[in-house]
Image 1 (cartoon, rainbow, N blue to C red):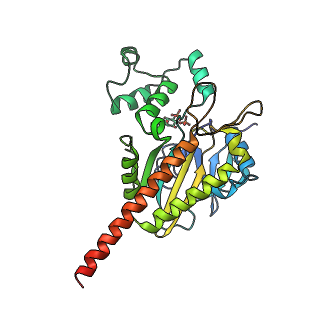
Image 2 (image 1 turned 90 degrees about the vertical axis):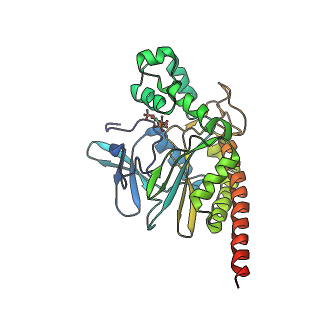
Image 3 (image 1 turned 30 degrees about the horizontal axis):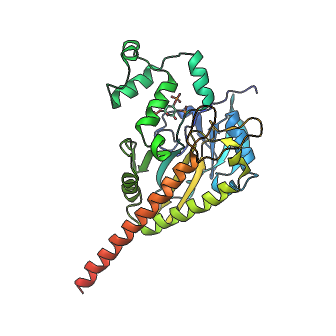
Length: 305
Ligand code: I3P
């Protein structure tokens, strides 16, 4: 194609660091469109996935895809705006899977050693002892090294997903310390302010998603990397969406994935269902805690009546 397109990135529209609505960090990647639609810079892998998803049982869990549009010299993907009509949405972005780099990225990284100073600095700001002596001397790390480091120091490699950010007026991105289901449950209670209706709505939506994934030809035949589940609630309305397919690719040779198996290089397993199970289990626990809190509150109220 003749127009500029996006790299196979997984940046999403709704987390505020890249949103056209709130402080864009990568403003070129997104554009406002007519009401009810957002435009995301074109990437071929993502457009192909969305096209397929519109004919798959996962369709109700994905923002509706309305084809492509050209603005100036750039091409954009036209997507349903998941926040349309919401007055004060609270958002959580969970990046799914036990790894956030493609097997191809690993292979390329072995032959190409482009150093990223931005990633070196991000690494040092979290843990000054993380880079090797050589990386300190170069003041740079490869992208793959950074992504692998981030995956193993967050819940990605243990729980099969990580919370990338929560937006409730202000943005919070520091969920790196979450390593256990108990800590995840706490984060979910914080995100929903222990509102039982929202917790239950999220829980049943994830159960419905799990059933749809079982019946999905798309899911069986794709390595899903760097894709997020976007949790959105606004007062009582709560829903979850699958977004960001820039690094999701079809498997070669009619191969199919389980999405539950541990990854070893070559098997292309992504651990997506490991992450989904962690989320469902934790939501179960959060519902128990919130129900208990509600009963306590009722008990306290009735003791005064
Ligand atoms: C970014 C994050 C993104 C990645 C991006 C990283 O790190 O890992 O997933 O984009 O790479 O900078 P962080 O969240 O710690 O800031 P992709 O998933 O699209 O590779 P990039 O800077 O090359 O876009």
